[in-house]
Amino acid sequence: MRTRFLVLLYCATCFYTKAFIYYVDPNNGGSNSNSGLIGSPWATIQKAASTAQAGDTVYVQTGTYAEKVAFNHSGTEDALITFIGVGSVVVQEPANTTVWSGTFTVTNKSYIRIQHFNIQNAYWFGIYVESSDHIYVENNSTYNTGASGISVWHSSHVYAAHNTVRKACYQSLSTGSQECITFSGVSDFEIHHNEIYESGGSTNGGEGIDAKEDCANGKIYNNMVHDLIRLGIYIDCWNKTLHDIDIYNNKVFQCKEGIVISSEDGGTVSDVRVFNNILYSNAHFGITVADYVLNGPRKNISIMNNTIYNNGFGDANTGWGGGIIILTANVSDVAVFNNIVSENDAMQISDKSGRATVSVTNNLIYGYRGHNWTNEVKGTNAVESNPLFRDVNGADNISGNADDDLNVTSESAAINHGINTNAPSFDFNYYQRPAENVADIGAYESNSIPLTNKKISPAAEQLIQVYPNPSNTGIFNVKCIKPVDRMEIADMTGTIIQCFTSPNETILHVALLKPGMYLMRVYSQDICQVYKIIKSD
Image (cartoon, rainbow, N blue to C red):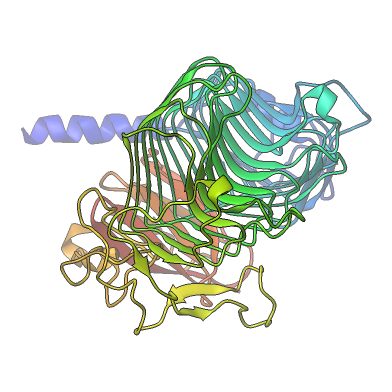
């Protein structure tokens, strides 16, 4: 047995000696005739994208790059190809090109990670992924893109995390430009911790996050979507079958609509769960199960533990707009429970379906209007009370901004008045639910504790090893000893500056530019470990 262990270790070591660290730095002697190694950098990102093989890491140094980049090779499960922008790396597409292309394009590739690039003025997509798998798009920003800032089609295991997408879709709707982040026909995906805001120049563009067509087994969570002239999060199967999508812990405000579930061309949507979202100050509705166009079937839809406030006042129509509305009769098995629906315009909860399999129960309702044309309902076991939000105007004393605090005070009737059956096991802050035997109503759970406190792994069970630490160069090698779900790097203010989703590499390379101390949080199932790492002067 000892001999077998030594052989395996030797083989792993041999494998990783084949991986290279490359550099792109046109401002410091970069030339594409160089080796690309330290001290001999390349001039263009494309040279690196044409060269890098499985296990290689490319550091692109500060600068403005006028180029389009296509990735030529794939990584492997334990040896990703990683591209990292160091400092301010701006990539601006050259003169107008064609639609359906990206400033960064990944087609028919696997196991690639793209981090810390600022993509500006793309003619069409900022980052475009097609027919690929295990692609990680993390900590990037896109600005003023003709179509989607991030667009993923017909792929699987794609993770878009901690990105900023601003002013997407400046092209006209006639060219199909209307979505800021697009996932179409993607399975086993996650879209999380992104900020999407400000519509581009097109008056029709600006849907925040779209998961559409035959998407399946996806999670959309912890995103902040705001100030868009269309809707925040859109689920639309078109004429296909879309299923098993969880939409949770998002904040959507100052959009035309909050969250919409649709079947525009007759396909089927099933098994969608919408929970722990905070939806406020949107022009029409917080959550809509729509009746658009061909209005295909929706079934097994759960809308639970959301906080929905002050929606519907942006349409200049006092007889329309509100909290939750089920517009279509083509639904079955829809459950609406444990939601706070407060002070929305013409209605709080409207059920226009006429279906017996739509249940509305245990919601806190404040501001019931009762207009007969709205089909407004209270449902069963409704709590009619002011939810007593902490601060609807936030620190800036202006309603409808990111700092509005829609958690409730300790006197709120939302506390301990929900139902436990099928309620989510955590709240907006990832605190345990229920905290006191009975779930609260709304996105927050009072008097609870963070789920990450369930188990602190002792040092003897380390998930990773980091070396060198401290590092003079700012480059750290992270060896994953056990499977890791997520890894975050935060500065000492608590701000997350890098995030790695499901890192499968045995050895991961992390670059930090500024000297100082950082915290590395590592998550594996119910374990959370925190490591201190230091970038020396």
